[in-house]
Length: 173
Image (cartoon, rainbow, N blue to C red; front, side, top):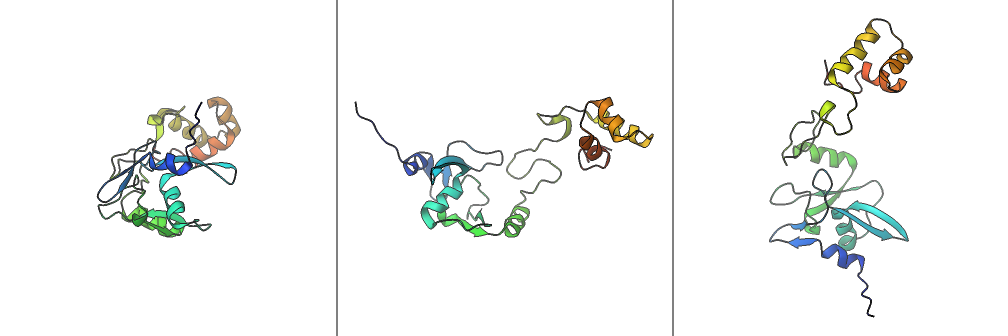
């Protein structure tokens, strides 16, 4: 019986399609289009983004506190793992880059890449409705305590507080 050992790099390259410009991650992607890649580093399982692994095998370790950003000539492409299209930046630089590329989605509307971020009732984990949120806020305005609200609506006290103070469900008037 012959046992074939596949290295982490071989697994990585089996999931990359090299085009004229970008090297596209063809396997699993996270919700914003970034490639997902799991591997072992120093005996520990790492679940990371594919472009970060690409940086590590081509350019070395990523210094603490830095992000790996994309700068694809053809435009923003989160699936790209071409090291020539990657650069390091602080979280502030990463946030500014995200804003400049139109990937920031405060309103949870459809963004440039066509993805949508679900909020409120349309989120897959939503247990409350817009009508319930309005009722919770009305109960607080009528003098109910957060504890009373939490019991009445079957939610945690901190959750009731965040709803009333619009830290959650801020989009509901």
